[in-house]
Image (cartoon, rainbow, N blue to C red; front, top):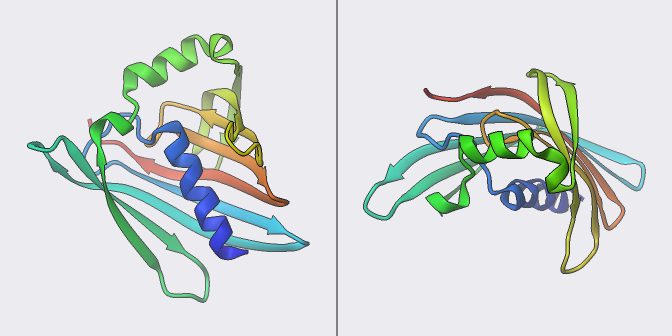
Length: 165
């Protein structure tokens, strides 16, 4: 169950493209609760941009999985700058939420209260994932995600974030 939970969590952030305001030092910490078959796993998921290669126009993104009682798992990957949404894109989604098929909402998560656009999430290829994602003007563009895939329910909430000016 845990491995599937990690893959689901990481995949959701790729689906929205990732970071608003992509800059080295941007970070988001998420509280994740994954439930399947009556068993829940809780862990922290930390995303951070740690480096930028101007010649390749790529960011090095570090993902950490902090599971109580287990060693921290760290993964890094180079991502093209085009994979990250900009402030302007997040602003557009928030201003035109209904045009994107969403619902404007103000939500409260551990990191604070944010105006968001609640967007439906589905896997158009496999139709095995369903739920919602709340886009906000925060690092990596996501304040909350609540999805179910193959009977596994995953709730992701922003605990804290850091955006460099």
